[in-house]
Length: 145
Image 1 (cartoon, one colour):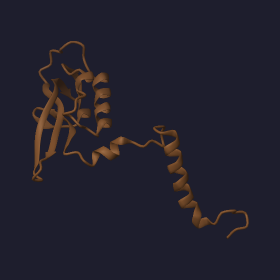
Image 2: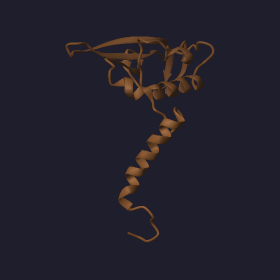
Image 3: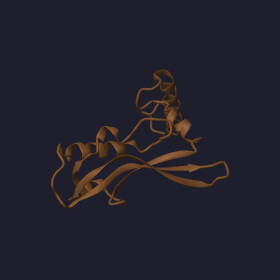
Image 4: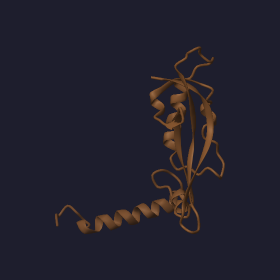
């Protein structure tokens, strides 16, 4: 052991873990010491929603489209108990993309396609069977980039 270390090196890891735990209890929900209830509750979930963008009825990348009309970015992610989505980051990115690439008036363009935004809801029943349903939250048109 080096003379300048007052605590043996093997004790640093456990001491850091204990210190972190004490700080978590003291400061409650302040990042990075938060005790997120999400992690405790997600283990008992039986249902989850995956954000999905469709163009012409097929799953697609929203970044491949522009000049959106009819889709309100603020309504693509409704907040209700039936839609439990832990993938909020892609939803926020989609909202930003829609805000930057939408048109105020419907254009006169024959190359436009129908687009939809929604969620694939996956659920495990008591027997362990997986079922899928679709919730569409917004529809409109867009042009492929």
